View 1 (cartoon, one colour):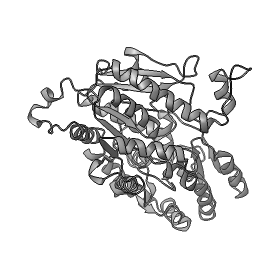
View 2 (cartoon, rainbow, N blue to C red):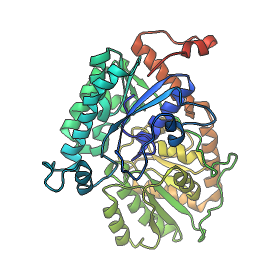
View 3 (cartoon, one colour):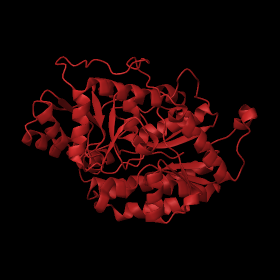
View 4 (cartoon, helix red, strand yellow):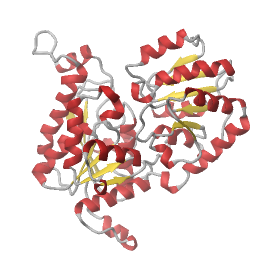
Length: 435
C-alpha cells in the first residue's frame, strides 16, 4: 500500500481514512506493507521503525499487529502546509547549494511525488505482495511503477479529485496524473456514489470498474470517549453555545462560508461562539473577515488539533458545521455524530448518502444554514434528539472500520479474479494474504 499521509503525519481526512482502512485490514488478517513519505530526522515528530510502528501510530488496540504491518519510509522533507523557505532549507537548496524550484506547491510537490514513484519499483521488487493499493494522485504513479515490476493487480482509492480541491483552478498536471492512475487501475474504489459519477464523467472510467465504499469511523482511544451519552453540558467557562468548523482551512472546505454564516447566526444568538479548528491558506482571509463582521471577541482559532484535541472539540461544540464547497465523503460528520454532536452537512457530500440523522443543506444556501444552526441553538430538545439519534446511527455495523475493510477485501478479490472467501472458514482463508 502506497500512502501519502498517515498519523502522526496528517493534514486532513486522507490520513484518517488510510489509518482506518489499514486497521480494518489487519483485523481481517491481511498483511500490509505500508509505504509512506516521512520527513527525515531531525524532525519535530520522531519517525518510528520496525516493531515501534504499531504503538507509535496507535494501530494497536488490545492486539499485536506488529507481525502483520511493515512500514517502508521514503525520506522526504515535505510536511503539511510547509512554506517555501522552510522547504528549501530542508532540501539543502539554500546557501548556493543547488537550484531552487519556483513554488512549493508546483515543482516541489511534483518532485516529491515523482521521487516516491521512482522508489516504488525497488519496493515492489523487494517486498512480497499480492495486491498494490494506492491512495489519490499522489501515489498513483508509484502504483503503476510497482505493477510494472511485479505484475500484481493495482487497486486505486480515490478520496477526492483535483476538481474537488481546486475547482476551476485545477492543476492540469495533477488532473492528468489522476486520469492516468484511474484508467490504469484494475479496480477503483470511490468513497461515494457522487465521486464515482464524477470519475466516470471527467475521466471516462467505466462504472463497472468502480466499487463504492463509504468510510467507517474508529473508536477514539481517549479518556474523553465514554459511551452512553447524548449531548453534554458545554464545558467552557462562559457556558455559551459553540458552533464548530473542523477541517483544512482551504477553499474546498468552505471556511469563508462558515465565517459568513457565523456573522448571521450572531445576530440571532448573540452569546454564540464560533471555533475554527484547522490550518490552511485561507486562514488570514477568514481572520480578517471575522474582524470585519464584528466577531473578533467570539470567533476563536484553534489551529491544527491532534486526535485527543479533536475529540474534545466535538464534545465542546453544540453543533458542527460542514460548509464544504466540494466534499466527496466527509469523515468530520461521522466523528461529530460519534461524540453526540449534531452535524450540518452539504446535500452533495458523499456522507449525505450514508447518513439519515443530520441536517442537509446546499453549501451555498447561507440563509438555510443559518436557520438550521439557530434552530438547534434555540431549541435544546431538538439539539439533544438529533445528537442522540446521530450517535445511535453511528453504532450501526456499517459505520465501523470492519465494513469498509470487508468491502475493500472484496474489491481486492475482484481485481485478483478470485472468489469471495468462505465465511465458514474465515481464518484459513485469511492466512497469508498480503496487500
